[in-house]
Length: 62
Image 1 (cartoon, helix red, strand yellow):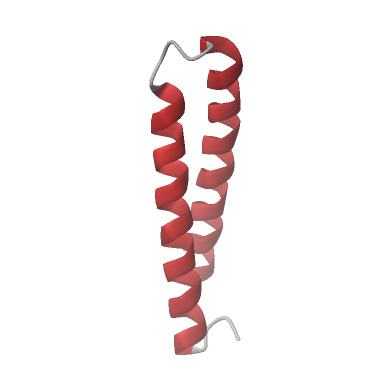
Image 2: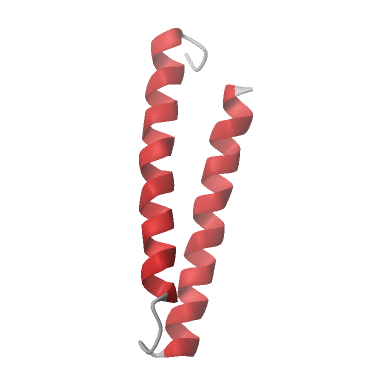
């Protein structure tokens, strides 16, 4: 279960990265969608670090 959650978080980060690149190329700074995408990506990175730390702490990812 934990490994699936880690994989889902990582895939969400990749999707947010791709969306942010698209927004950067299309909007030319006239929209806040790029900032929203960055906020999501940073939040997912924090969650990923927490999940990895928890996984190593309980010994599930050793």
